Length: 308
Ligand SMILES: [Zn+2]
Ligand SMILES: [Zn+2]
Image 1 (cartoon, helix red, strand yellow):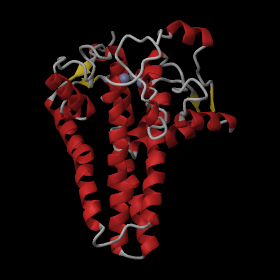
Image 2 (cartoon, rainbow, N blue to C red; image 1 turned 60 degrees about the vertical axis):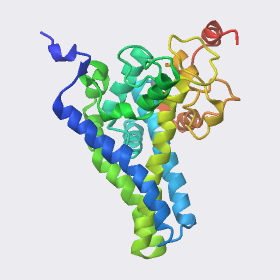
Image 3 (cartoon, helix red, strand yellow; image 1 turned 180 degrees about the horizontal axis):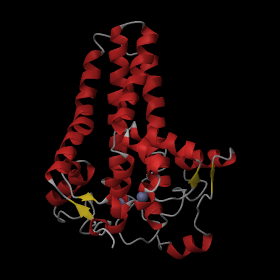
């Protein structure tokens, strides 16, 4: 007999809600104060090139971990990767502080299943059409939904990942990877400046500011790009493309393309739409580290084109 809990799509209990609130305060609220502290700390320790390099490098590593690892590989299975690449992408994505990999996948698969309808964990379009409703919808979809939400059952939404025991072991160490992502810039900066103020400055800029910058970019895909932007392809929800954010979002801002062709490893789809996440996948494929990179056929793309 199958376990009835694997059939339940969402779970909701006080323990899970406590975990959600804790995560929200630690990784969604704290980085905001981290940015304020980083700016204030400039008077104690002027910011140098070391902090800026650490901020950019850590932002790129963790951003690609989310886009290529959490999203394109684990959620949508748009390519196959060696166990080492899978582990590396899990660790890089975990360091972003946006939740453990398996939970993230379950939440995102539910987003695709229920996009902009009842059950979507973060739609901006379910709070009414008035001005106030739209503002409320944007705030909800951008980050307020994370305070407390129905938790998609991982047994239902991510059974493929749960079968991969060694990967689950790596993903379970989520909080350690987040801590590592904060320690690396702190240690490098401390060594570079040979001072404790260097450690603090590295922790703030390469750690908390970096988390803050990346999370708002990723959240903007859920909020603004389900409301504003272009729709070159037909899809049943209100997803949009935001081309000017393509580079800083690692290609994630081709969100309408992605909803129309979730099986595609490329979100840009055409060479003239920059997609850094796909560039990494192509590079890994050339190196023989990933294979079976999924792309939609020209006919399928043509069949979904809107008149615009
Ligand atoms: Zn997706
Ligand atoms: Zn979406």
